[in-house]
Amino acid sequence: MFREWVRSCHDVNPLMGHYFFTDDSLLSLVDQHFPDWSDRWSDLPGIVRADLGRLLMLWVHGGVYLDVDYECLQPFEGLLRQAEENGHDLIVGEEHLVHVYLLENLNDSMRPFVSNAWIAATPQHPLIGAFLNDTLSNTSRLLNECGSDDAVACTGPRPLTRLVHGALDLEDEDTFPPRQCGERPPLGSVMVADFDVLYPEYAAWNKWMKDNCVRDPESTADDEWRILPRARDDLANQTWARHGCAMLAMAEDDAGRYMSGRSVAVHHWMCSSCRPDTKKRLRGGVTFDVVRDVPGVVLK
Image (cartoon, rainbow, N blue to C red; front, side, top):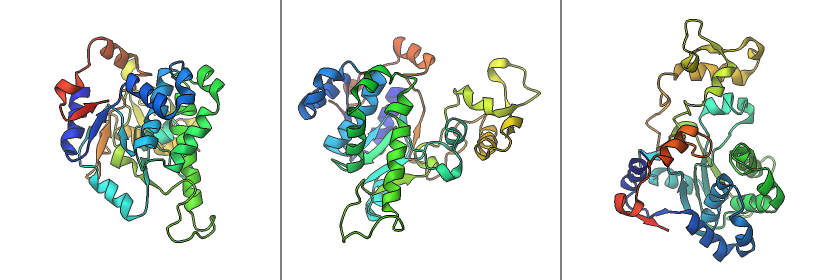
């Protein structure tokens, strides 16, 4: 599973260097480049270290970060070239719209809502620097409030989305004064890929999404109950609920229903910090030797 997914990304992108970071290598990165955080780093919740660690890696090295539960379908080169040709120095992807509507409860006017499972950036990117400065300056919140249940809000997609919206607003010619030729926007130039490019699969295991929708009266199994393509009566006037339930109903039998020819990679939403079944699998030995099983990947 994880081994095959990591191998797919190496095989599809053979000309890129591939590096696998561990807890120890992240701590070494902190010691070397962010020594003021060395003493406190190990006290942070694991998911917070994972969220911040990917940004520390990108801040120092640049490149493409992706979670280990990504399966790659096409080379990243086309996406990176598209960004470069349009002057973008950071790429993120909008999360699957089923999540945007039914988990975040956002209407289209509030989009995009981006995920942090795949990010490409140049080194020392100003948006990543702003994220790290904003986040690491609040030590007590990181240590006391940002457990697995709060990571999305503390160090994950929600604060990243806020900064992405800020960057997009600053790039808008109607709201930002004209810049000199070659001048970089304050938060960089961000490209947001459509959801089917980097997040074409939704988290089918997340049953909370169904709670927004009308239950199919012919559905009997409590743990596998199905929905109709419409929102609950009390949410019928909410655009996000109507759109989300319609999309979810179309894909109940196929979490990859929205994959397209543009899909570069698939995030499988294993969520080791929040899914008991994934934790059980990992404890049961669903692990692999990176050096032995994917020899093209360098273990940091």
